[in-house]
Amino acid sequence: MKIVAVCGSGVGSSAILKLNAERALERLDLEADVVAGDIESLSTTAADAQVILTSPELVERIGKTFADIVVIDNYFDLAELTEKLERAIG
Image (cartoon, rainbow, N blue to C red):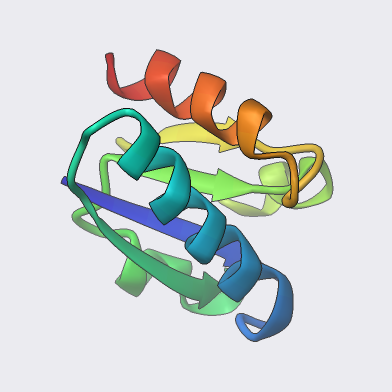
């Protein structure tokens, strides 16, 4: 399974989201390839992704995808990430 954490520039917040998504997956005892990326290269990085993690303001910029789009309000809230990933994957 591939999960893409997306932010505007692909540097800061997507890296934080990636790290915390990996922690949430560990809590769920699930394995996935989690990558960080920016919104502009999403068509490439998320072409084979099952889940895209992003913030509310970027959802409309994602475009057509077969992946589940999971909106994360607080990138530091491990409980939110765990709950939303469990719903998307389970």
